[in-house]
Structure formats: C-alpha cells, structure tokens
Image (cartoon, rainbow, N blue to C red; front, side):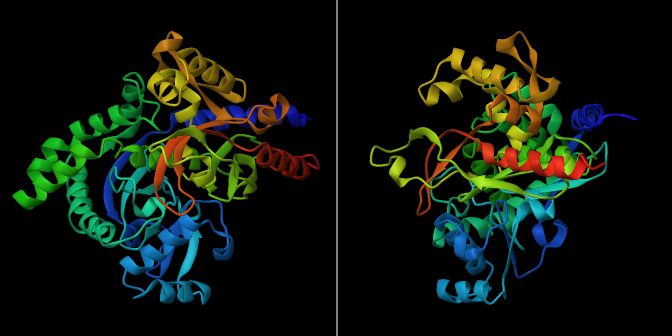
Length: 419
C-alpha cells in the first residue's frame, strides 16, 4: 500500500506538471456580464478571500459603493449601502467566479474583462482591465466623476477596441510575453513595463486596422502609451487560468491561490479544492510616494495580484527585476537571496521563466504548504500600498502570514490521514 508521503509527492509532481504545461492565451475582451461565470447585473466582485460587508476595509467599501453608482443601480452612496445590506446587490469574491482583480478587485456587470483561455486544458479565467496609472482609481478605493468617466470610456471604447484587435490576430500568447518580459527586467507584478510593451506590440497593427474611428484610435493609443503597467491584469488572468487547472488534485499540497482583502490573507490548496484558509493580512513594507504618507496611513495588504507569486512570478523572481528591490532601498544581492529563499518552499522550477542574473536558472514555482511550515519561510509578495481611506500611496513587499499555511496543513492532515 502506498504511504501518504509518496502519494503527496506524486500528486505534487502531477500538479506541477499541469502548471508548467499551461498555455494561457488572451482570446478576447468582453463585459463581465457576458463572460464571467455566475455574474449578475446586481453583483459586484471584490478581491478575495470572502468577507462580510461590515468587516471590510474602507477602500473595499468605497470602491464597491462606487461600482454600484457607476452601474446606475443606486443614486447615492447611502442608497447603495442600503442595497448591499438588504442583499439587493450581491457581493462576492472574484476568485469564486474564475476571476482576479488587482487592489480592491472591483468588477461589476459592465466592467471590460481580459478573457484568457488555458489552451492545454480548456479552462477560462478573467481579470478587469487596468484603469490607468493615477493614484486615485476605483481599484484603490476611490470614486468621483473623473473616475466614472474613465470607467465608462473603458467600457464603451477601450474594451471593444481591444477585443476586436485581439480577435483579429487570433489571440495573444501570454506565456510567451511573460517568458520574454522576465529576461527584459520584469518580475511581472510590481514591474510589468516590458510585458506591457510586448503586449502593445502584439496588438498595435490590429488596433489600427479594427478601430471604428480616428478619435477612438487616438484615445486608445494615448491611454496604452501612458499606462505602462496595463498588462499586469492580463498576466493575472493568465496565472489564474494556469493554476485553476490544478484545483482538486487529490493529495496535492500545492497552493493554487493567494489573495488579500485588506483584512484577511487567504490561500487555497490543490488537494483541498475551493476552501479558503485565512489569517490576518500583514502591512506592506515599502516606499511611500509622498513625504506626508507613512505606515500609519496604510491599509493592510490588499488585492488578488498575488496570483502572480502563486504562479512563480513577482516576489519569487526579484532577482530578475533588480529595480524593484532598489526602489525600496534594497540591493541586487538581497533580490538574489529572496529568490533563492523562495526556492526552499517550492516543488520545482519553471524552465520557461529563466532569470538572467542567476545564470538563467528557472523560476521557483509550486508553493508547497508543507515546506512553508517546516522551513518557517512564507511567500514574499511584491505589491502596492493602499491608503486606509482609499488611494494608492506606495509600493513595496510583504510576507504572507504563516497562519494560513498552518491551518491548511492541519486541514490537509485531517482529510487525508484517514485515507
């Protein structure tokens, strides 16, 4: 009879094989109501894990109210809150609908979505488009008339234009973009400039060919030229599509999701399906954009963008993006040390994501909850810093809390030791 350790190791090999063989392709851009499973007109999605309205951080609450107002479901913030409390508007995590969202992750029915298909396994994943590069956006817990105008422009102009361009070229190979971007200095989370440039190059000619008019084309090109981190959201959808293919792998201890909602940090594990294991979210250690901002102004860690670390990017490959570490006052050696440390908690490496500064070693990938607990090392995440009252105020890095992994390992033991 095969012992438990052997079963786990075999399952993890299979889960890693699924992860490494994933082929995420951006196939379209469409409104959430038309593509996201289970989406409703009176529903707003947010960054996971699940949390009750009364317990949400202020950025989440403000951005959800903003989405309700933008959708025309309510006329005032007070009416929006009453609709939430009366369950006239439903609030659920993006992850429960095969989606991910940066920051507060706010996704409503009209939100234009990156649509990514894992060509190897056929499953789909989704992410809202980036709103741009300013400090006050819906995803950072802000809402006003300029934000509403930008959201409407994205829904009416940018989304349809991108969708037409992507369809015209038969899709965009996101895996290829990631592979090349890493060798150009991206870690594909806090730095995704190269990835965005590669994406723009892929669609530029098709955008010219399919744009409905000159004004729309000019506006789209102007936006894409300025929003240099725009394609992070496409990478997030690709990561979700890759990881979802391994969900439900019996006996596997590989992490399939990490997400934060400004209160809790949650993980999911392949062998434990869709269950969340949570602990209080930590605060991000980093650099603030203005001298008047500091740690006392910050909200705890927030957003689904840690799906990039879950798939072996972001903080796991800081050695590929030394500018990310230097931004927060670190050194190249610290970046290398951080990547080597992440290797100790992973099942294997990704030979397609090669790190030039490490003699082209593959990126560490496949977080193993057993290794996290046994080593005492938790995943390192590159991320933004959100103001406790809303707004982007900095960037840095944060550790996942150990409590998530301890709870997951205990649940795993209860489930599988009996078998």
